[in-house]
Amino acid sequence: MISAEEQKKVADLVKQTKDLILKEMDEEEVMIKGAANYVTNVDLAVQNFLKEELGKVFPEISLIAEEKENLGLSKEETYWILDPIDGTTNLIRDFHMSAVALGLYEKGEIVFGIVYNPFTDEMFQAAKGEGAYLNGRKIQVSDTPDFGDAVISYGSTPYKKEKARNLFPIFYSIFMKCGDFRRTGSAELDMCYVACGREHGYIERDLKPWDYSAGTVILREAGGVVKNWKGEEPSYLKNEDILACVPQFEENLLKELL
Image (cartoon, rainbow, N blue to C red; front, side, top):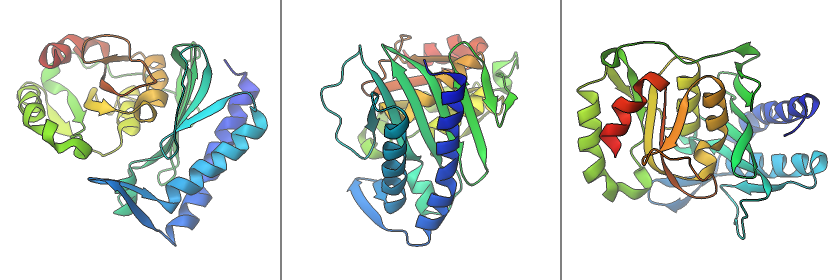
C-alpha cells in the first residue's frame, strides 16, 4: 500500500494527463490493432508520460499497460495496471466517455485505484480500507431495493463479436427484469458509475486487467461487489468476465450469468 502523500502524488500525475490528452487530440492519429480495436497517439502519449513519471516516484514498481507487452507476470509482485485511455473509440468519435485508469496490484489484490475522465474533470479514487471518493467527496452505491428499478450497463465485446450470439439473450433476459440498460463504451467509468449510485450494475465478458482493475477497488470501497461470472474473485493478471454491481442485486445478476 502507498501512503496518503504518495496517493496525492499519483492523483496529481493522472490529473496532468488532461492537458496532454487535449493537446494530442488536435493532431489525432488512429492505428488499428484489430477488429473494432484502435490505438491513438493519445493512448501512447498518456502511457509514456505516466510510465516515466511513476518510474521516478516508484522505481521499484513495474507497469502493466494496454499498449505494451506484458510478460512474466507474478502473483506475488506489485504492479501498476494502466489503461491510458479506456474508451478509445469514444475518444476517436469525440464522445466524451473516456478515462485514464490506473490501479495498484499488490500480491493478488487491487489496493489503490484512480479513474479520471478529463472531459468532465471527474476523478474517482479509492485505497483499500479508506473509502471511495469522487473529486474529494465520499461516494457509496445506491440502496435502491427493487431490481425492477435498476439501471444496468453492459459491454458488447466488440473485439470478439462472435460471442454476441450467446451474450444478447442474456442481456435480453436481464433487460426484461431490470429498469433499463446503458452502454457507455468505458468499462472503468461504468464501474465508477455503479460506485457513485448512477448505475446499479455492469456486466461484460473478456475484459483485460486494465479494463477493470482500478474500478474494482473504487466500487468495493463504495460498498459494491466485483466478481467474475463464476462468482469468484477476479485474477487481475488475466482476462475475466466481470460482474460489478450493488450487493442487493448480485444474486439477480449472477443467476443470469452462471
